[in-house]
Amino acid sequence: MTTRVEIVNDFLAINVQPGSTIQDVVEASGSALPFGCRDGECGTCVVEIEQGMEFISEINEKEKKVIKEVCAGTCTDKTRLSCQMKIIKPNGIVRIKY
Image 1 (cartoon, one colour):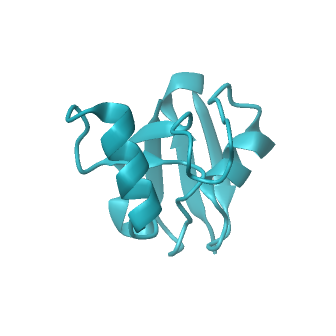
Image 2 (cartoon, rainbow, N blue to C red):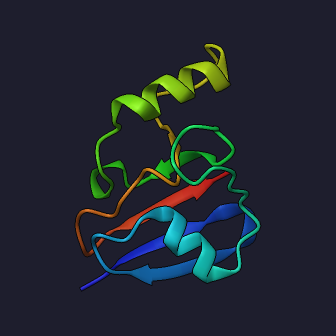
């Protein structure tokens, strides 16, 4: 059982297993979404979740700190770092844009 991850900017959709990071999905798909440090410290991979928050992992403290610094108050509760998010449940759709 998989969850469908849709990358709006690239018109891509990929079916992935729970436990996969969004970074893994993006790299395998050929998406142009950028990555920097790949460890949740630089903020390069900021995305907005348009759908499917219930299918991804909770935000961690490192991610909260980086998002706060990168966005300077302009982000929403749907802003995340794609290198830190994992798919946690099957049978859903997670739609992201960058």
